[in-house]
Amino acid sequence: MLKYVTAGESHGKGLIGVIEGLPAGVPVSEASINAQLARRQKGYGRGGRMKIESDRAEIMSGVRGGLTLGSPLSFIIYNRDYENWQEIMSPGHCERLEERTVERPRPGHADLAGAMKYNHRDMRNILERASARETAARVAMGSICSQLLQSFDIYIYSQVISIGSISAVPRIVDAGNLKEVCDAIEASPVRCADVQSGEAMMALIDSAKQEGESLGGSFELGVLGVPPGLGSHVSWDTKLDGRIAGALTSIPAIKAVEIGEGFANAARPGSQVHDQIFLNDEKRIYHQTNRAGGLEGGITNGETVWARAYMKPIPTLYKPLQTVNTREWQGEKAVVERSDICAVPAAAVVGEAMLAFVMAQAFLEKFGSDHVGEIIESWQRYHAYLKKEWQWEKRT
Image (cartoon, rainbow, N blue to C red):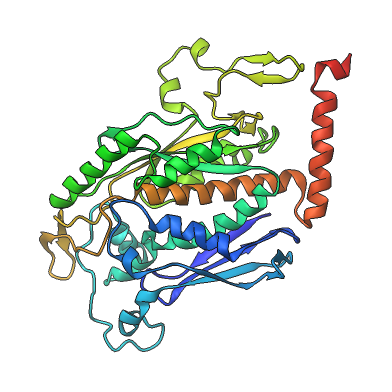
């Protein structure tokens, strides 16, 4: 079973990730991991923290000579800002423990609920871990999973489709135009392939900054090259669409997810929803549409797996909302921490990482997980089976 855990606080020494269950023999490149970390730090509307940190992952174990060993892979991403916080955030004696305490919880953040759960009067003990800074470790983890998937020609993309009230028409992505569309997305400061909509999004972010506001939005994720048969229909926790939705909503501020055209499909009659099944000239089964998002009954059907995630505005506002001072027990304005105005483009990169993990997990469940050579053999046998049993001309 592929699994991972992260550790670390936003202003602590660093972020640590441990991945267990990776097969031996997977090529892993630190440069590829760091390229993904750089993508996460970009995006119009990011805050001052991005000017301080220049995230780089250092692999500590589980890789030798550029290949995984089959043992747990661990890495660390050091926080450069820790030098300014070590007397406040040190694991040992803190000379300035009482400084920067948080007693005015932000509406919409984990501050208050977490403090009540764990009995922390200083809510910094909550916000440091609940911070989206933790997602840097997820992106590093997801990059490793993506490197595994890419070995089998499975590729993941994301594109921003809305920020605030500005929406763009998503680009249709397939194997033929993947590089072209991804290049256009990466060239946009808001990771939107529609140049005109992207400019309108940036103008809206500028306006929100002047007004002390924050903005949410939505993004689309897709996985190309997925074979049919990943996931399962047999139990609630094996259904791949449920696992994808859970992984995406675990990202800070993501409050809704749809698989395929989930929201629109709810308002349509069945004849306009379900993807009809056809045979092509080579007698292979295919769908002309993909409203289901590549998943039926919790199982991949051979089409592109795609989903959309919806992010609420960041809860730290430079024009803070009303809250309660829990030391004085009186109404005040919420605390203001250094924050972004809009982090939707960065959240899309985190979404890629979470999707990569879920897909890699399902892939290894299907094809094995000890050594890459065994997985290749299983992969080849499965493709031979599909070609023999699921092409009509081969059965007659």
